[in-house]
Length: 433
Image 1 (cartoon, rainbow, N blue to C red):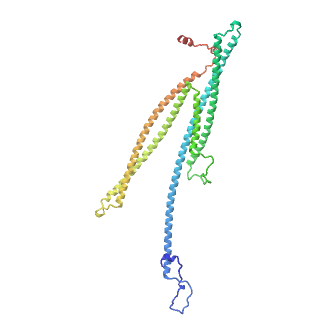
Image 2 (cartoon, one colour):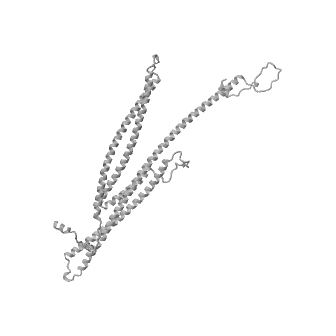
């Protein structure tokens, strides 16, 4: 009977078999007796079970270590991937924050401009009261003519025409003031929507930033009940982008509608100045990003150069080992697994070094292109800065045309009301034209 079979059957005591004794006269105490083969089988079974238990334990331990490594690597990569996702999300939210902030600034500037246009129209409307009062007073005065002298002459027709023209101008100014008022209201409404969206973006940015700073050693982490549950009000990334884009597009549409109300030289200068300033900000942002990319590129060049240098001693080692093995004498000069392994290692290391050198060349080429682009951006910034200075100077010059000169004396006021020329230019112009 084998040792494995003996484990499944109980040992049979010797007392249960016929015992032939040499001394039948001696009294035998009843106790269990086992055969010698059973004793050997029992010991073998214990040894076999112990060895098998050790093998199982060893396999379990190996599986546990492998599982620890696998789960650690998987956990590390999962956390790394989510860190990258959070960082990318943080950049996306920050980009929209800046976009909304710039849009709000644009809306504020447009509101101020429209307010200035509205106030200018109101001043013009107020100034029309005096010409209209004078014209109406002339009508009343001339209506006092009697009999044959109360004729519809050229003066009468000119006065009626003047009243018609002044009244038309007043209606246009009234309409312009009302239109500007309505447009300012729409701009403010769009601004409030942008502000609410921007506040939400600030909150989301703070949450993303806090999550990015958390790690497995942070004190304020813990188990949460069903954190992956669907939350009421959650939207898709596409809906999120569409919402902010709608707010931005709406504000830009209102700005566009507002700009259509102001077809003047000053508006053209303002628009051009705004475009130049926005272009200048974009160039400065591009300069900053390019400088950061150049710095990252230089760090990568250092790492690639180090990686190339680190491959060289490994290649020398493998080649030296292979060359030394060529000195084996006689039949010991075997092309064995070591030979193939060293050849594969040399080829692999050489290919890796070549790939690193190629990537190093590409990186240096990209660095050169970035340097050229940086110089180009800096030159363009200098040009745009000069243009902004000139456009601002031109706009300041245009503002002097809209500056009202308040009469200092009663005589100056009367001259202004009567349209009297004190500079002598009217006489010169009349003589020319």
